[in-house]
Length: 188
Ligand code: NI
Image (tube, rainbow, N blue to C red; front, side, top):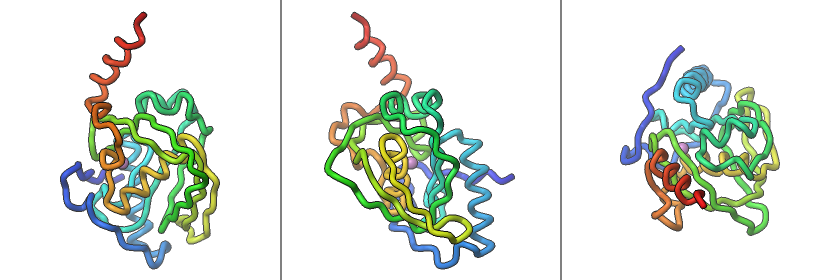
């Protein structure tokens, strides 16, 4: 078990364009993924991209929890963005195809911006392709929260953090303070 250090916003590794992986079966890639899985489990997030652990390669891992767990992880997102559980996925050299023009704004968080959240509009329907850890192709249609997580993680490979996608920075802040504000707004 190895817990890797997670880079925080401002670290230059998070602004880099990551390089494609030539051989998913290479021992160093297998080891990197094992360590990333340990790190994600320890940190308690839904996804992690290799640049976040200081490795500038095009590799992401993610897991979409069943509906009840998602709102805790991603603030209020997930409640009406339920896309069902998606098993832990290792995606190498991913490519995203946006399907249609529909977007939806919801709160996101990121392990590189601990304790913070912000509203980001993402495409609601995508198709993504990549390679699994076994080198076999993966191709999936995704919608809702699933599509959001994949877009967020793949942005990391192009040096983009979610605040750079935000249209309204007034929704950006510390998650506990945003929750309080939301609770106050909800009161009659
Ligand atoms: Ni992130």
